[in-house]
Image (cartoon, helix red, strand yellow):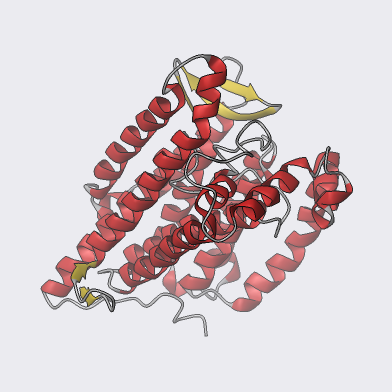
Length: 388
């Protein structure tokens, strides 16, 4: 499908526009990571150390994007259950001595020689692939609680359980949110989601209360200035960065908060440094790119040649956009602090690689939609149309 941009009158294909948005976000991330980590390089007496590491992750992610864009969608569907099983096994491996790596008190990583990655990043995509396949194959059972609703909820519950004990409350909650969205798009009864949500809320509350640091984080969220040197320090420094940036920013490379004032300035809080250096204009540009990603992903889902591809496209789009929304909400003190990086912009790692891989799958779906439309084949599925 070709669409005409209002500003330039240029014709762009949906896959080309998607690739342009992802590439622009990734390039912006490279610039901001270099700007933010140059201070760390200076303190360590090295040159370009951090940005070279980031570029290595970007290269690995680009290769993953290319590989996933060339992966057949029917292969993904045929192996959806195997992919889900492998992802659960990977989640279990983090607890095995010698394989699982504990960093900052959390056991979220598997270490294989020089490579360390988070299985939870794989699990997010695996859950989406499984749900897209299940909801397609079992579409005739979408109003059957036991056979059409419970199996995907059980899978999501298992992933939630394994991730929450790492612990990683943010990613675990994201998995539940994505599961709910996929079930809604797949046409399940709203009452099923409502009853399950009502039962899950006490469980989430218990998980929250069970960890004192989460309770303190929640209390600090209401008034971070009540403890600006303690629990509220990171959020306060983030808001100072955004406030200092103003409309046009202080200039690329001129951030004060990256001078060891704002923790995780190159990863979870990179949006704050972007807002300080590039100002409101830079922040709005990034928000606009994620809004474009949402619109283009929805268009790819609408034009997908089959139900599985359509559901998967929407799931991947929502995964990327929700992560961005949560990260930016944390940086702007709109929600309590969670360890979710900003897709494509935060310092590289397994999150960057898997997000680029997910973008590759989305591009493949957009490519297939183009082919189907060129041959006058119409999509057979409309997301969310069957649950009303």
